[in-house]
Length: 429
Ligand code: PBG
Image 1 (tube, helix red, strand yellow):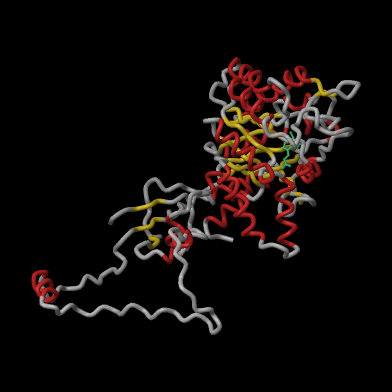
Image 2: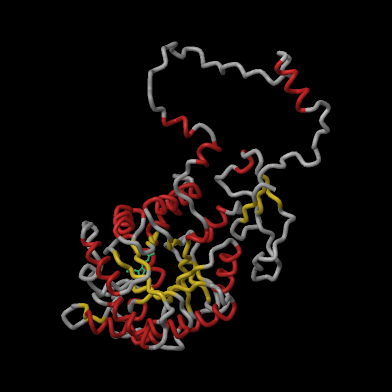
């Protein structure tokens, strides 16, 4: 066996878009079981996708009739054995102009000639391991569809959530981020429910960690789901969002999430100084191992509309422009990135995704830290709507948009398409 490639946990024998059947010498071996094979939630062991190079024709080892010396002697004597002729040049359609070929030193199409060549020169790759799956949860037992986000649900935290996570893990998506729909009665101007140790998010984290100890859980750190004003921070009488007082609350929120078992806390509030304050708060409580993914360049975007419907978290008045960034600004992302790096962020996030590819590339070039991109609700819903209306091929546009985020420099992508795209990558539908 020349080489063996063990893929991510997928039951399937080919990866869509890879056109594996076109590669002579590559074939899937589904019978092989490895001791390291992951076990799915249902307990059945998953066959891993193993591809073996060479040995294409099993059992066809031909017995040599002539020795090497005899073969060579025949060729030297001018009796070369027959091989198929070069196929004739394919005919051009009638009416094609007959011209002298142009003298081009470079014809870039040569490297795009066949699926095998295209696969060889593909610069960017994408895998389910790059996805973080955002999940909406609520106190109810049922999963309720979100009107503005076809295919997304507010999941009951006890059942629907656990089932969705199991489905995602089955196709290699092992990272999720939680967004709670909080009952109005628990919302307040100071958002204190955000750090209730027995609140919806800490409860869901504990349940998930109990069922799937190796699941990577990201949390959102911001007051908006808990704020009666629908803002990410505490609102003063005159409408000003109070920075340092909000950060004080966010620290408590992050610590309560870490205590429940969160792996990565993700401040999405855009208050100044929150990364450093949260780092210090986590460390002082012994959570040195908990990472911070900072929403570094989060823009005041209209692409968040469907999300706010999902959580019923529209600001009661005004907008978020005094804390989220102006979509017209590029250099300002560097100011935020320098601060977040200096304050100890582990991951820098850009949000939204596709309309802000230049910012993703900027941070990728300027920082050695991992970069995350958030393909937000509006981006998701537009692709879904275009697909439903048969204006675009939903699946292809989905995969292309995710690949483009990777090409721009995103290591990980937060996307509502995580499950659908991972199934696609695994050849499932
Ligand atoms: C709030 C938060 C928002 C999103 C993630 N966290 C909305 C907002 O800032 O108003 C948006 C995500 C999406 O649109 O998918 N802290």
